[in-house]
Length: 361
Image 1 (spheres, rainbow, N blue to C red):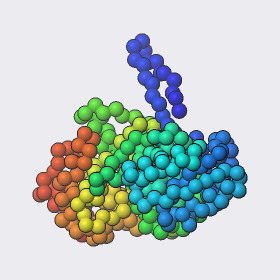
Image 2 (cartoon, helix red, strand yellow):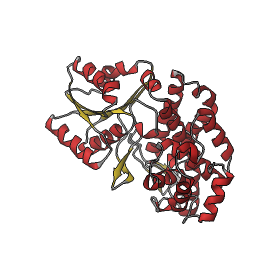
Image 3 (spheres, rainbow, N blue to C red):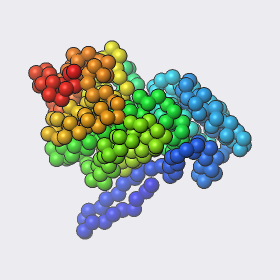
Image 4 (tube, rainbow, N blue to C red):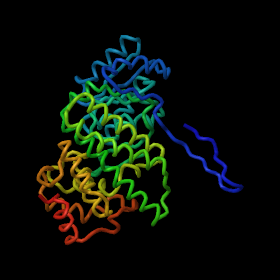
């Protein structure tokens, strides 16, 4: 969306591009709306579906059948990892079949690959999540693995999001709980963003921050409903994930939903023998970072416990020594991104932090 110049006073001009989804469809059996969505967006010709080996049977084949029954020729590319190599493979196939648009079907990896591929091809893409495990399903950032590290790369938000809550709620509950962990970490991400604005003059959007904060509040307010593992649970979490993604698109960065807790999670990915899910690690990280911010870390912990998301090293399945190591070194992840961790904390401070917040249990 191209916003017109805003003129403030005589000398200040503000202008900004925001890439936002044009259509968001969330609800029961909404995957069958794929044709209506394509017609509304005037998407036709050839389509390339990107999905994982598991999500192929969950929704990939169904999407292909629905499209082909309506005269849209499709090919399917199965991806196992979200890497630059896979992005290049997808781009090659898309060019070979002369794809007019791409569709990412899955929980994260396939959507991230579709997102960056479509961005580099200058083609639109539709996001069809099969799980609500993190907010990348609707954001304008693509998270890929590069040399055993996670990198966030600029891309475009999907032109449309189709979230079938029946499919999402049937996915393993652990994935939905992880999505809650990713969302609740928005509390500390926004605090880090505000800190970076005050101390480093980083550009800040109060609107994007408020939207991100609201997405986290949805999880706190609805924890007792989410834990019932109903289709309504999937609806609530998806609503939060879409809001969080839109906040990032408005900000033009991942600041509204990625702060010190994400640095901690990414460092765990590097050093832990068997990392937990991204959202699970961010949730635990948010407990500790909220303590450092002087906020209500107990509220975050209690909410995660209610939902059934890990709140300790033991529940993450990660030895506490790796938690401490990750805390000490987390500031090295995207060092240009200022956070409450500053230039790092000491081992002594990290040990005290895991003890006070009970993460060391």
